[in-house]
Image (cartoon, rainbow, N blue to C red):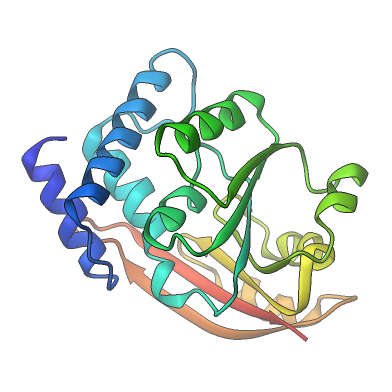
Length: 218
């Protein structure tokens, strides 16, 4: 990892209340180099530079850290190359995390990184949350569901319900959110959520605007 990018990672993480020790930096560097290497052969992400991965994947993932509800289990839906679940696991080892993605090569990469980093209490599953076998295996297991992958908030909320514990939380990570989209959520039929918080932020060392929405299941 180039020195300038290392500083971005350290200071960016610190802005979210995360102190990275040298071993943590080495782990993120290993993740970074493996991602760039795999990405030359298979398309895991459109971002192909060290700085881009650190800003748009690592720091974006860590931006949720200060706002995670108190819970011991987390499901990352549409986790892609492991975001945000793996970086959150790296800085919060006590959290039991399940990653799920419908693209086999991305799940293969997640499992590779989990092995390389010797992470425990985290698993990667290939499939879709709509699948009956996935629902049967994971039903009601999670205190938190998080996703960067859903463009439609209503769809994320509805699909998350069966996997949540009673009074569980959905953490939706998005870009700029339209006010009308948020207002329309109050009309969602079926199981209801209470929108507890909206956090608007700009990722450190960038102009990338992000929004984190916290929903509690009623």
